[in-house]
Image (tube, rainbow, N blue to C red; front, top):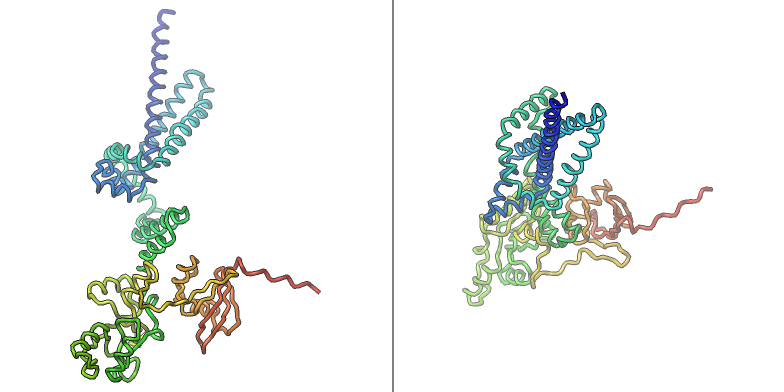
Length: 445
């Protein structure tokens, strides 16, 4: 009888060793799937795209997984779930054989510790610290697994969609607008790198300006009509030439009779060429023949569309009108570019000092300064959705036209009206709320 028990005991020991070996293999696979999930989530899509363009074949597998994200995630979760459950079952079987009923509780503790340390925390920590490198190494294997598991993943996806529809949740409603999400991702990455110090403020403003173009209208960027220099077409040629040469601008709107009656745009170069052909005889210059046809655009045109229109028409100057056809201002290609690169000045520009920081931390601001320009210069974050200029923001928030000396607090700043001309605010003092001294409490009687 004892001789008959020996083979059974040897067989049981072999089974236990085999189970331990299989459990180790399954945990290695679990660690692989955990690292894959983390690496493929944290890897840089932009860098992988560039690596593929540079000829890195491994990056093509990673980009395929990015393009088939649902299939990739499903395959990783399926593989990870299967190996974790299988390894847990094997560990339970081994410990039950060794310790009897007490092995169940022991199996729960051992499995939790092994999976947590070696299958989750360790591989995911390594993957998150070297996401791009890990993604390149495991991309091909995960793509093969995703292809093999694709029928099961598709079936699970269909079942989930059916269950969501039964609960009244439309699966297509869970998909975000990709274009908007891409813009927000870029904006967030730029701001994050700026906070970390790897992107300078000027670069942050330029990159942010490019992304902001799609949200701006021409009315947000244009030069207001009250700041436009115009030429009266009925003036004598010598006076027109004198006025053109005294201005820093090369293109000037020409009106006749009423300033709203714009008949064309006069270019200083055309005027000088005509003067040269007339051998300096000012009276021989026919200014009306030099005036180009004006280009009128609506004030609600998107700035990005207007930029493309400037490039297509090969002209850099347009007059802005409202829905009733009334002149509102003008816009040039330079105005749009300044939204990206900041103020552009040359040797003929007249310096504008509309923002003047004060020693006490406050800033004196001319009312016509745009909120976007003030935010760019002072690195503030005042909202510009409801108003274009600083004066407009104060009027919008105050819901009235304030008087000189009045002060208002909103958006973390104190706005004090310094100057006013008729109904127009021409000067303000803006102070961050943190620098405003607290008012002493009034003692109770």
